Image (cartoon, rainbow, N blue to C red; front, top):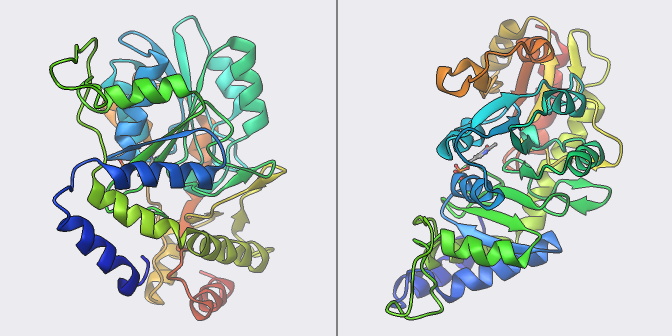
Amino acid sequence: MPSPERLMPELEKVLYSGYVAQGEQVELFERAFEGFVGSGYSLSLNSGTAALHIALLLVGVSRGDEVISTPLTAEPTNVAIKMVGANIRYADIDINTGNIDPISIEANINKHTKAIMVVDYAGTPVNVPQIQQISKKYNIPVIHDASHALGAKFNALKTGNHFPYTIFSLQAIKQLTTVDGGILQLSSKEDYERGKLIRWFGIDKKMSRLDNNIQFQGYKYHMNNVNATIGLVQMSVIDGILNSYVDNGKFFDKKLQNISGLELLVFYPNSEPAYWLYTMKVKNRSAFIQKLADNGIMASELHKRNDLHVYLNDFNQKLPVLDEFYSELVHIPCGWWVTKEDRDRIVEVIKKGW
Ligand SMILES: *Cc1c(COP(=O)(O)O)cnc(C)c1O
């Protein structure tokens, strides 16, 4: 969060402005976000889940369709697929990154496949060029859940530039938070305009209520001026926030090499992770977590693989690479709150063994 001196006057101003609903600040926040991403259109929403839902609607995914997705993610990624009545077909993951494996995506494509959902898990970029290639070859659009990956890059371009639909979550624990909120980053103006209607009951805010004529199902997914004001003030300090994650991540990349029982991720060439969390693979994981806990450091497995939820397991598939990765997966904190002293101590504790 920016300093109270910076945030509170803005917040006070908007709270007592007489206009807390969706208005000018929302508009300004969207344009600022577009500036950050560097291209396209930013549709602001009240959650990342709303962004996932609208992306699926814009693609036209509906009942009976299949979406190829990753099991290693936060639940909203896959719950959103069920919101439109589609079935989830999981691809296996890449052992080096924990992200969806392009070879497995291709092997899972069939005549029902309507979209491919990919996630930069923990801030690690997916294999962008290979996924783009598959999308083109089969003419299946990609939805990029970048909820962990604000500011991550591939080929020097920020997340939000690689696929037609990119989701950012601005929820409490994400890099940029508006308390709750989300962005659907779109490459097409047409999708942006339609997305605006979907986010507000199918009603066009530019026209009077009486002139409106609802044509399709909409929702109440818009962002309000209060959340947008928090977002706008954060945009002014976002580079510093993101850098502190990356700086800590690169520190761990360097200092945690060649430790017995610990394996680091191998990122794709030309990718620059956001390091939302620092992900590793460790042998004897419960002892590792306990050892760190004894030293006041919180290490965790974090997410449950989504195919273990009965509602999110449509095809009961075998996912052998995930089985292996998931048994060793662990995260340590990497965010702006991890100080230089903290990270030195984390490395020291890990190096003593577990
Ligand atoms: C946080 C998160 C979401 C959902 O975002 P909300 O803003 O909480 O709705 C979606 N996908 C992933 C991978 C997330 O981590």
